[in-house]
Length: 144
Ligand code: CA2
Image (cartoon, rainbow, N blue to C red; front, side, top):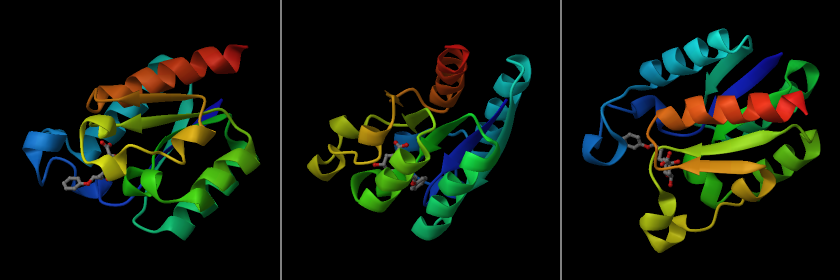
């Protein structure tokens, strides 16, 4: 079983800017953790990061062809993108939203996640370990 690990805008800067907020782990560390977790759990994964909403939507749609589930951090698009939420609903794959920080403890404009409403679970405030937790949760869902 393959899962899509999808990251949105600016996630490529992880660990390089604002470490007090996002920590020191880089996007490469995140990918290494996701790949290791999937390997240990007998899953395959493809990791994609894009700064472009349309590319992210294309990736969600493509996942329908060969993936059993999605782990997604839409980054700031969580709070704006009804189009991404629609894509997640349209493909109807189990999806877990991950946030490195806890958006609800930050500015009021981060309190709503349209994409999170289209996911079966949200894991927030756990740093990159949230991706490991999301993969484990998804594996349990896929067994059902
Ligand atoms: O906490 C998260 O994972 C977020 O999805 C990160 C987004 C933010 O817009 C969400 O509200 C919460 C930001 C993406 C990363 O942006 C960076 C900016 C500077 C340095 C490193 C990353």
